[in-house]
Length: 325
Image (cartoon, rainbow, N blue to C red; front, side):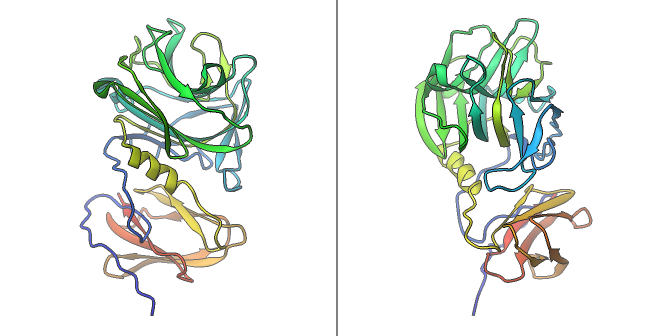
């Protein structure tokens, strides 16, 4: 007999899906941007830090799923995210974590750069930034726009046309910048600079760096997350692990966002067909339906706030928990 065991949790005003197995957790208390890039550049963190697309094209992600990442053309592509109170928390705390999946097609022109995130001040032609940078050894972080030579980074050899999960954590109070690739801390370097920009109304830019020479990313970016605190190594590894889906069987599935407020998107393996059921913690059925495509959108607006379970029909995958905000 198959038995599912779940941890009883009282949740008020929010909803969360996880695997049925125990694993490290990442608190979303400091998450200020969650941009899955699955057909839009909306922020699913609840902070409404939505982006504006500039000449980017929807593309396949690391699993080959259509319209689940964005392709940057290396010429004039970028995403612009306006300044906000939540995004400016990075400066208030002098801490930041940035993670994303990237696939470099080529370096920009002769500058050997693939920009992930920059906050650019056009008045000074400077800013702070995080990028893959072959000319500087591999990965680069510059925190203070007033000190363009005071950057920090480490060596890493990138391969073109390959997906990587890349991460940065920095806390000025801890005086160290940590760099991660595929969940591994590839280096930790002493660093004490302020995360500083003179104009705190400047936008945040994904896939472009204009500080100094103009540079545009040539490749794909997916699943961008930003926190206003420095995550631990275990937390970064958890983000990488949760972002890796082994192609074990046709019933393998993932979903986002979590927590959810309006909708949940279920992604399955190609050719996968199944039924789904959403139940609450006592087993009451709230939603059932069919999955006939690789991407299925579920409307959960009508669900009361709380903890729910999502289960595919054949039961070979454990139920996933989610929180309805």
